[in-house]
Length: 308
Image (cartoon, rainbow, N blue to C red; front, side, top):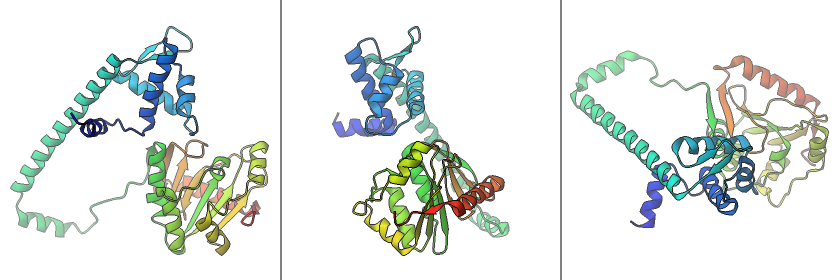
């Protein structure tokens, strides 16, 4: 079987070469080879998160899923627990996933066949009459939902917040220390969506906040690299982007909000959140209103650092 076919099959069972899940699996192989007796959660986290910001809870969740599928075998007698992996366990895990995916595809095929049968049997004139009699929208937007995975969170924020922003809209952001120090990648979906929103005439208010005095000092001394952020800096100079620093340590909401209509509320404080709640003013009016009011209050007390 060709390597391209093997890679395609692995992708079909959700084993992507560049995914965090695959990096965890590779780390387990390397650590088991070096340590022979298995790898601890801390060791796997250190190996996977080297040069990347990935929480230990996320690694633990992946390990738990691998254990349930048979990819790894835990040793719970030792403290801390050890995770063992072998060619045989990998084969067991892949086989379980393959059967699971095959079962899901079979169910999808059965469902599609029933749909086709229903479509072919339904009278066209009855469908037209029913459609015209309804007099209301067919689709109601989901008002609140949870997003997991760093790439997924950024993609959804780009689509739900920045892609919807237009001329006259205001996007408010509470920004922690890690985001300020994050490298700007102009080719990223989120970064591109931010720039496109600004080009359409949206305005961004970014409030820099720090949970303690040490983090606050980092914010005070951080400067924008104008060469790396050329396009973004131009919007700052034009006033489309306003940046303020709250002068005292403060623990508050971590969010990105479009007016008072839609908001992404993050569950962690790392620079690339791995979990977010996407909600609306209609779906969670008290939460969105309180978040916007808190932002406005702190914004008035913050110091303008656009030329910092």
